[in-house]
Length: 218
Image (cartoon, rainbow, N blue to C red; front, side):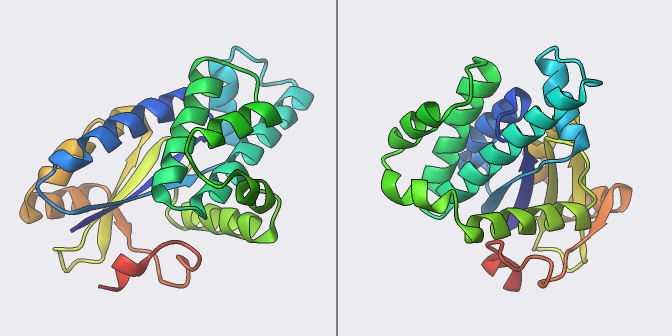
């Protein structure tokens, strides 16, 4: 079995394309794949978002607004996750397409419209997105990203649980992630070679507290 931690900008157009292609290909892989998508908010992800939107990165007020926007979108995604992975991923893709790709203004009305299209419980979602649990889950994701050494989005950490080694493969950026399909199909020996080239130690269970890590216990 292979486990993938994918770190994304919840309104990022590049992340949208990476996620869409990965989700479309999951059923094609011969091995069992467990995918976790985590939002990431840091200076780099905000800077990349501003570059895509042709914003002045030296404008501190503009940067603060963009940071707040990505943070709010992250909380919305974490709130959607409380209703299941399928609903959360559907909502995330819709959010990235409308805000990131189509460049629509992020608003309360848009968020409600997009979530309603997922057939999730809108009333519950609106309550959860303001909850302390959602904020705590978001902070847990940021801790996982820090412990894994993630600095940019999109990035992924891939673990092959058929291997006894305690290392995984770190893929940073869209170009590196292009090799993910081949990595999911590779043999254990080839995976071990990739581990040695770009190794990342497996996180501890305490680091992953609050993240769906049941499979890591296997």
